[in-house]
Length: 310
Image (cartoon, rainbow, N blue to C red; front, side):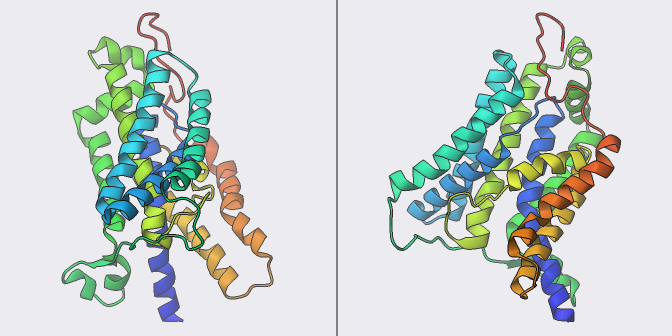
């Protein structure tokens, strides 16, 4: 029983990574007023291109870089259409979602074709932290994970420090709260939105690449399974703040792991209902927390400097 609890906790940390990465990417752009809704598509195309580059090159590192580059391209497109052309963020985001969905299906068929045996790539191995991994119980859970688990924790700490302990973070947050005031004080609103949107989408692309590189070793259509959509709720649940998004990611990951564990042990509950658990939990959480969650004042609103209106 004790060993099962250790395994369960370790799986939660393993499962939280795509939620943390996609959540932090969403938060970063949202803090400057750019509301990304294309997470599902960006994660899918990130998983696809990351898998393909890893398969062809034999390097997981190159695959991750390719996934981040593809995510950055989507971020550049989103920033251009919403910042330069002043188009609706939600509409552009949905369009990018469908583009990502289509590309994630098309690219493997163009590069690999249809095969009876799906190609595989090696998955990321655990990297024990010297000394700390030898700590009884805690060492196995927290310090014997793959490096992206460690990165998700460090990224959360970095974003917290950046946003709340630096002048750059203050400028970044001011863009999402009052772009006109930030502009009048010399903050380049357009550049800030470009920067956060591109970097945010790069992180979301990496979140997608995590799935084939850690979970399965292969790419399957639709393997993101709604995690991108859950990320939007995660950002609201986490109050658009790095540390609370991290805690919320642990909750979402715990629900997902619990659903699969109950399914594995042979519960009488239909597995379709178990797969619905993360989404049911999302709805319940949003009902009780949405009104109290802090949201950037200009989230989803474009800024037109010439008109001086938001």
